[in-house]
Length: 227
Ligand SMILES: [Ca+2]
Ligand SMILES: [Ca+2]
Image (cartoon, rainbow, N blue to C red; front, side, top):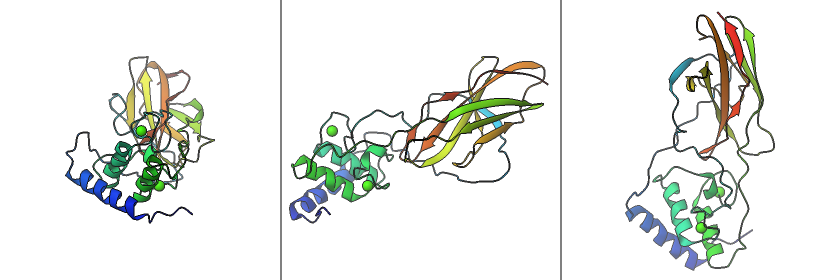
């Protein structure tokens, strides 16, 4: 077990906390939205929401940096530690790279561990985040007048799934996010909001994980439905 009681480091950390609290907020301080995790036996249904937009913050694609390398420059620094502390006190959204020890929560211990690497007391890098993998086998099936969308949960990652985000486009005219709460145990969605006439429907889905992580989109095939 590593010692985190080094007095010098405690002093450095206290200074860092003061710096963080006194520093101006130079980046967006949006809080991570609370996850609604409601597992029910029923197939979720929802309404097609507002027009799609670029992925909203604070969700980011994976970038491949080492744990603790908050600025992505490949080495540990005091700047990295300050960024962790800003997340810790709620000035910035929490991001997976701040979980230096990989225990699933961001604490002052992560900042201290990083500072130990800065002064050469720990080997660098500590490791890399779990990958924010996509779902697989995204399928669409006509159940006139509805469409059933199914998928398989992401594999080969230890990251905690918070929710799924689903969107559709009709006749290739652009994506709209569907306003429905899909929790981590949901693996299907019933679209009851199909349109009159004959149209081509396609769906895409991405996984939202803890620490502001999102997978890339998975896309279904196109389905022609007449209603
Ligand atoms: Ca760095
Ligand atoms: Ca941690």
